Image 1 (cartoon, helix red, strand yellow):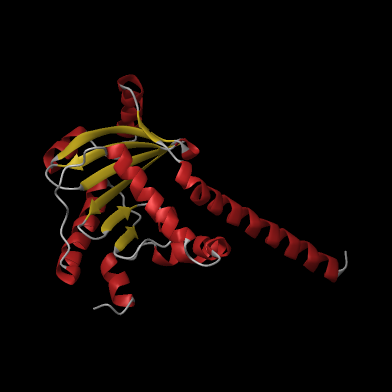
Image 2: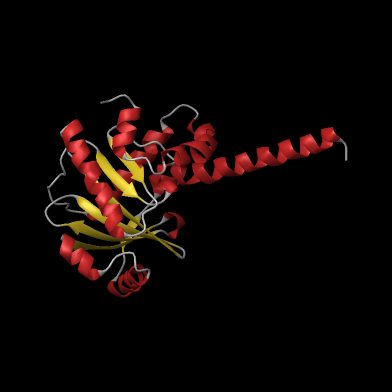
Length: 225
């Protein structure tokens, strides 16, 4: 095979792969405005709760000790994602265990009066740039206690750096609250010029460069100190 043919084949293969990555990233964001979130009935909810607990990511005793109370189990219409959610007593801090096929991915989320903080374990959560004042961090945490410590450290830092503290007002409709949240996030991404063409960069570069970087490190890197 001639060198030019090899180069052309490799270029077409790479181009096709980038197109697939772009489509795979763009479709969920484009469809988010039509997404629905429903609370599962008790039988279905118990099945997913057992899956989360059997993954040994979190225990009932840990939740009790830290003051997390059950919010419910919800299913997002996109990609069949299920959320098992607990809320920290008295404030808008949540532990959401996302059940995606055979995986269970925990994430802590705190809402402020302006903005929020999310601490996860998957680099995929870092791919799309968040709205201003909505901070994201993710670490390869070996257990839920480490992840919670990372979240608390970031909360303490943001309290000093931005004067933001957790919101405390109760939520009347949690499903509507989550949908408003994810739709606003998707709308912000789609507002960026040629956003779909940026997806390969976000996938290959952004999510890896931020993985393991604390909010403090991100804040300092942005020159906000």
